[in-house]
Amino acid sequence: MASQIDFGNQISTIKNKETSKVALFSTKELGYQPAMQELILSLAESLDEARKDMLSRLENLTETQQAFSPDPKSWSPLCIVEHCIRAERSFLANRPRPGNCNHVPPSFMNRIHQMGIHAILKWRIPVPIQSHAILPSGKPNLEDLASMWGDDMAWLREHIEKTPAKAMNLACFPHPIAGTLTLAQALTLDILHIRYHLPALEIRIMIARKI
Image 1 (spheres, one colour):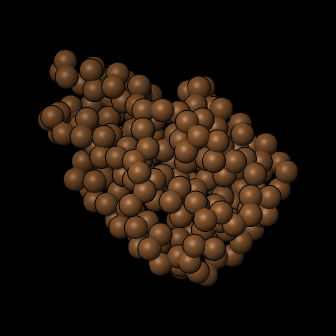
Image 2: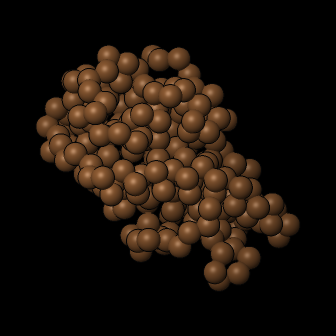
């Protein structure tokens, strides 16, 4: 297993400059890197920790508190977690079979969009939701959400174990704005997206504890 990443750091410090190259340049430019598999293992470990951290923040709340929303336009703690899961599944839903990737190199505009998304997530810039598919339904409870994320993590582990090292660089995961992403790019965006919502989650939890 690769060495653990300090999840408290931002994207610029994840694997130092290596991750920023993965995020901003095409597979052709990046070329095959022996360190890619190690990087992906580290990102997957950080993602798993981020998921567990987000879920654990809700464990000491009652079911009423978990589902509490201060007003109709605000999300409950459960809704914030559900949104993160739906967003993750929106670009990992393709789930290509290991070694059977339909590689689609990103265009120049895709790379520009990737940079914009990274800036939005890193600096927590408020933006409107771009897809109704990632809006929370408010129906799953905490156990349901933990099960959904557990299923996703099980698939990710199997995918990493069975995918040939040389195929780790391929862009197989379609993102609605950033274009097709490599697995490392997708995991990086996923981690940043969870971190993006943590301050709002803490505020909702603080409000919910008062009821």
